[in-house]
Amino acid sequence: MKFSYRLHEKVKGIWDKTHEHPFVVGLGKGGLPVESFIRYMKQDYVFLIDYSKLFALGTVKAKNIETMAAFAKLLHETLHGEMDLHRAYAKRFGITEQDLENTKPTPINLAYTRYMLNVAQNGSLEELISSLLPCMWSYWEIGKRLVETYPDSINHPFYGDWVKMYSSDEFGSLAQWLIDLIDRLAEGKPERELVVLEEHFLTTSRFEYMFWDMVYDGGDWPV
Image (cartoon, rainbow, N blue to C red; front, side, top):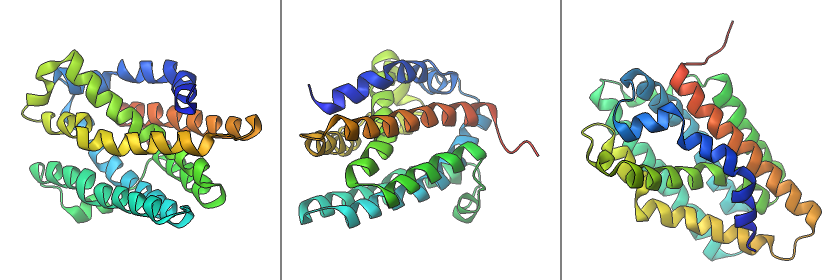
């Protein structure tokens, strides 16, 4: 059994709840409140700034040029693909790029990114991947599931571009490369090390769900 299958099974319950989350369902049905999407867009933008740093650290920790180049591609696609989507959405609301960059992260956002950055800076390459993978993998799964469940979601005049990006073969190929890499790196690892990777994957899957919850309800600092 591939290690990625074990990881997916570990978090299946969490990811199933994510597919049922009103934010995600709202994207599919097209009824998501615009204010929730604006909150998501701004919080995810500052999230992606830190998320990009993980790919830079992956390049540093890579053992060969091929892996370095792949992480460099992931960094480029995040900075100039995903973040371009956010910038395009922001223009529709008169939100400048400076406004996006000046967004203050919520407690959940801050805790999530700092957890991943701590793992990336202090752990192995496989630990780095196991902590960042739930974001890319689950987004790809969400995008595909939305197209399957709500076929017309890809044509929605507002949320369609989001669904198109995350259901696309291009985005999926990037996620699949990470999945394949964690499988290769996990081969021959003792169980005690696999458990550590599994725990990172579980923790950030929980953070992913909490992020959706936060942008839907507007959770922020209580004081």
